[in-house]
Length: 80
Image (cartoon, rainbow, N blue to C red; front, side, top):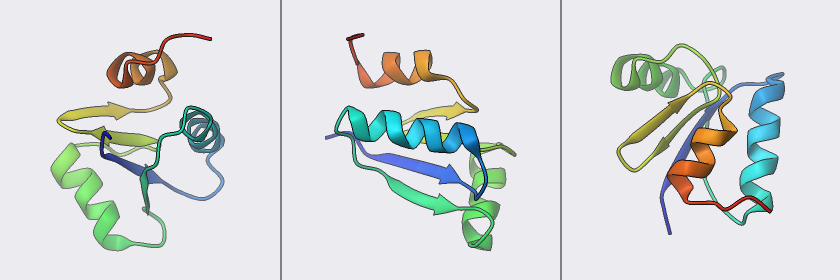
């Protein structure tokens, strides 16, 4: 199964929608809370040049912001 790293933070509605979406399709993911984990925040900014959540790292692909269409494309999800 595809490895998914999910950068999130509290009170982020797009993050919650994305989490629900991934769970609905049976994907597991590693959550990294950038508010609670300074190492995760630094990694998000320095490694992935992202300053927003949600940011998802799927293999070599980085999806920044709320983009379910791109997420479906990368994960090869067919619309129901």
